[in-house]
Image (cartoon, rainbow over all chains, first blue to last red; front, side):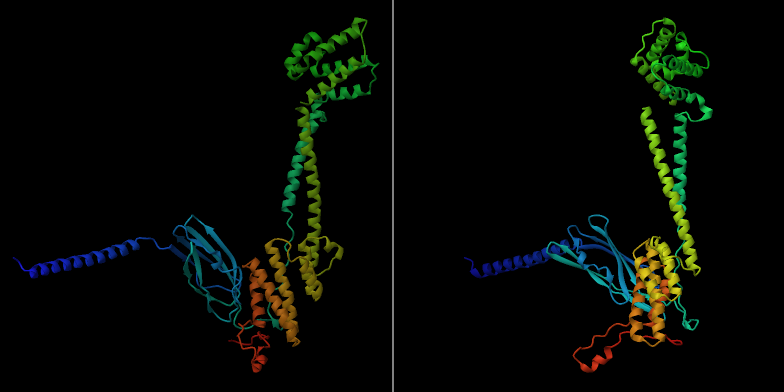
Length: 312
Length: 185
C-alpha cells in the first residue's frame, strides 16, 4: 500500500505545469492579437502637405497649398473642419478652397491664401495650422495641418520717395482702347457669306450678263406675264424662241431626243414638251385649234417649270 | 428641292446682311468711343450724353479725367456706376482707381490735419486696393499703393482690454496711427 503523500505531490506538480504552460499560451495569444492588430491600416493612410517656396512674397500675393489625403474606406472628410473663405485675420484671407475627390479614398484639397501684410522690412509670418476632421460612423478622426512659416518683403524702398512734396504713388489705371478685332472679324465673315450667297442667288435667278443662258426662260416668263390669254400665238412664239436660243438652233419635236442629250435636266418635263410641240403644231398648222383657259394655264406652267430648270 | 435651296440661300443672305449691318454699326460705335477715351485721357471733357450710353471704358476714362480735375465726388459717382461691369481685370482697374481716389483725399485731409476725416478714407482706400488685388493678384500698382496706404494708416491688431476699466477707455480711441513714416526704421 502506497501512502497518499507522493501522489498528492505528483498531482500538485502536474497542476503547476498546466498553469505554467497556460500562462505561456495566454501571453503568446495576446502577442498574436497585438501583432494582428498592427496589420490593420491606419485611418489616414497618406497625408501630404505640398507648399510653395517659403520666401519672396509681397503684399497682395497669393499662396497655394495642396493637401493630398488617402483614407481607409468609409472615412469621410468633414467640410466644416476646413478654413472658411474670407478673412482669417487682419492680414490673411482665404481666397479659394477646392476639394477634389480623386478616387473613393484619395482626395486633394487646394487652399489659396492671399497676404495683405505691409512690412517695413523682410518679416517672417505664419499661415496658421488647423485640424482636419474625418468621420467614420460615430467615430471622429483628426489630422493636423501644420502652420506654415514664410517671409514677406516690402515693395517700397527704405527711404520715403517724394513727388511734388507728396509721398510717391502710382497713377490711375487708364482704360485700354476698345478692341475692334472681333467686330472686324464678324464683319468680314458676314460680308463674305453675304457675297457668296448673293452671287449664288444672282446666278440662280439669271441676273449675270455673262450667264445669259440662265435667264432665257426668266425673260420669256416676264414677257408671258404681260400677255393676255387671247394672245396665245405670241405666247407660243416667245416659248419657241426661248427653246431655240437655248438649243442654239431651231428646236423641233423630232429633235427633242438630241436636245435632251445636251440638256438632260429638261427630260423630266418630256411629256409637257411633247404636248407643247403638238399643241403648237395644231395651233399654227392644224387650222382648228381648241384654245381655252386650260391651255393658257398649261403654257404658263410650262414656262415656269423651264425657269426653275434653267436656275438649276 | 429647288425651292428649299433658294429659301436656304435667301435665309443665309438675309442673316449675313443683318450681321454685316450690326457689325458695321458696332465698329462705328467702337471708333467713336475710342475717340472719346483718347479725348478724355488728353484732358478734354466730352458731353455727358455721350457718356451715359457709352461702354464702361469711356466711363473709366471720364473718372480719370474728373479725378485729375479735382472733381472727386463726380469721379466717385462715375466709378461706383461701373464697379461690377466688365471683365475681372477691368473691375480690378476700377477698384484700383477708386482706391487712388480715396487715397488722394486721405493725403489731402491728413495734410490739413483733419485726421477724423482721413482715417475712414484711408480704410476705404485699403479696402478698394484689396478688392483690386483679389481680382488680379499681379496688379503691381495696386500692391504699391496699398503699401502706401498701409504706411499712412498702419493697421495693428486690437489688444483686448477690459472694457470696464475707465482708465483704459482713453487708450482705445485709435487703432491706427495716421502719418507718413520719416527716415529709416
